Length: 224
Ligand SMILES: C[S@@+](CC[C@H](N)C(=O)[O-])C[C@H]1O[C@@H](n2cnc3c(N)ncnc32)[C@H](O)[C@@H]1O
Image (cartoon, rainbow, N blue to C red; front, side, top):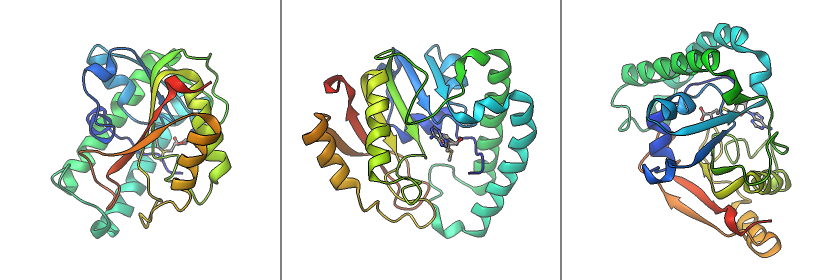
């Protein structure tokens, strides 16, 4: 997976977050090089991130990020028609937003390394019910050809375990071609009937990858 840096504002749109949603502690699970945790702190909200990537350390990530961002821009430029440009406005603006978010991430990682936990799904290095909201962007469903139904179910239950409130997952389509994930309905039914975890698919005010305009909202309060 190449690194990219989605911004705090992108997260607000991808997960349709209100100020009220961010009054507790928020976990960005699979935080990658996103600017969410840094942006939340700047706005007075409390957030932390988990990702196996953070074991690499700030120095290695600071060296790798510009190289990966450049690869991402090249890929997007070569496939412009696969993306909806309304949210960014232009290719240049997209590039600038991602560059700034990456700089925010690296600066925050250096300043507050304790906010970035090296660890990943399906076993997070966190206690039960220690955060209020978990956000998961571009890991589950995005990589549904790599991670199967059972892995997704275990991963969602793990995010529910650490959350007192909700888990939100975006997007709900496969990477690249944006095709719907074929096991999504069965997964939701299994979560509800076998695990007692209800969920709903909700339209959000963000679409960049064409067709990726919905999140899964999972009620963690009913789990466990
Ligand atoms: C496409 S990036 C998305 C990063 C960020 N959420 C965003 O939207 O910009 C996917 C991230 O998932 C992380 N990842 C891969 N396997 C993981 C796992 N098992 N648990 C948690 N994170 C994982 C990768 O290191 C990578 O940073």
